[in-house]
Length: 337
Ligand SMILES: N[C@@H](CCC(=O)N[C@@H](CS)C(=O)NCC(=O)O)C(=O)O
Image (cartoon, rainbow, N blue to C red; front, side, top):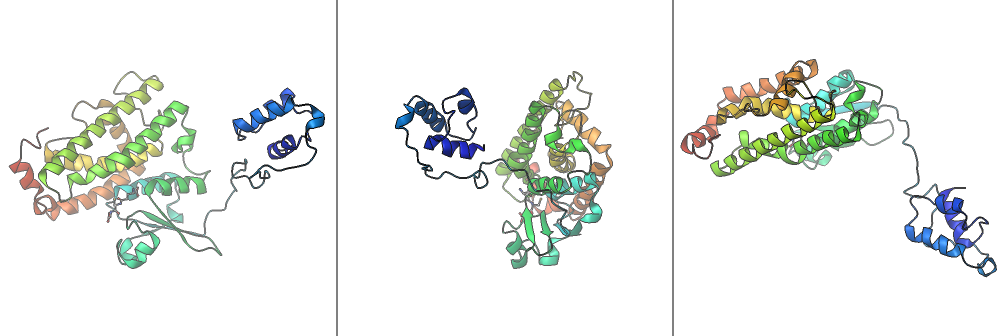
């Protein structure tokens, strides 16, 4: 008997083992405690006084229509077309590119630039992604409208969903060894998406000196937090030497590492302008993590892509043109390490 039909039958008094342990323990997990209690109360009522009619409770649903009923996801063919709108310098785009390289699905994804649609703020681009940002993945299936997906982490998770049997198994946080390591991997991803990603602009965008200095201090505090998270991962995998390499999911690389790595390419390039560096001699776990990732082909490739763009920014004098070098010179007390 399905949970839902037990629920309806129990309500109507049609089930003869009402009140037996089987009925009580067999109640659907999704059934409210009040309905389980109601069933228990009914079990003590004299049988002959129970109405012998089926009165479905308000909002009762069959198993097939309940939004909480257990169904497994459909196994789905990969889409007929995948197009990634991206910019080589984008750290959020680079996170998606990293996953594409690690899944070895480069040949299945068309690489596009927003310029093909008139730029990220064009009408055509905004119609697909009203946030006006990269990356954006446009998914096509025969007979369906094209589906644009924004947000790097959403795109990464989508690709992992669509190609479940490709790439290193450990890339998926769901395959990270323990619930605690999985939680730490998700925490690191959250640090990137909620905090670090927003602070990064203080290293290269126009803003007043005070705002910049405050943001850079916050950025450094987030790096301290990442060091703490890595130390916790290390403890969980029994690593007691800081030179030993530990990733954000433990011994293997997962999507949390992909989420963070591209921003570190910015940090290694730009923090020295402010007489800082990402490790400062006091984030040894993070430094070992970074050096280990640099030895991986996909990560080295993405680093080279970003660095080429950043070299171009420097060659055009970006930090001088935006007055950032003047700010550093004029406010040494604000920018002291
Ligand atoms: N939360 C977004 C952030 C995307 C984002 O900020 N992209 C930047 C490039 S790294 C962008 O498109 N900036 C252009 C703009 O803001 O106009 C994600 O994870 O994809």
